[in-house]
Image (cartoon, rainbow, N blue to C red; front, side, top):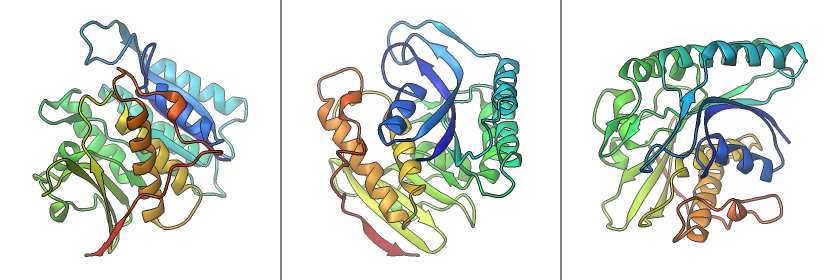
Length: 276
């Protein structure tokens, strides 16, 4: 059982951001402290939405209160997702530093899910926030989980295939999702750490509900914290997302009941191991 701080968006309807991260981690037996950067009625991709960003000063106060209650000690990991403004990025950077300072005898793993945008729309947060994530958060991360568009933005060059993916840092685990495949009907997830490269092939599913990236990051982190090779974490996250998507077919939101849990882990997903 790990203790994890998660910082991202939250919705009243649907399962994106914290609304899927928290139940996914809970189902695997972990304790989660969730700090919402925005509260919305639903995913912005729907026809109508309402809600607002949470003032970063309020988030600072919440984090400080958690620390004053003694709950920032013994934290195993922190993960960040949707950070809509430069001020939210600054809060996330402070949170990482504050949590690590509260745990001097252990390394607190930091997973950064750099939610910047996607194909074909491009950036869907303020460009200044995207640049701040690249410059101020990514250098402090142990794990980054960008999609193809986000990896291209962070690298400053286009990524169009598994062979062109690259790590965001020499000691960072970079797990890139939605990488185009030469085979129609599939996409690739590519994990890169030092000289090791692992690839999973994922079938494309039409009209998939929102939230798969958030779920993938949460499942990868949960598996990573158990130890073992990176390929195991990649396989677990890929299998968990695919199983959830299969069960959610025809719905407009991911089915929480289909999430992997301690009693019913997903079947092992094939992984191709490469060296680079």
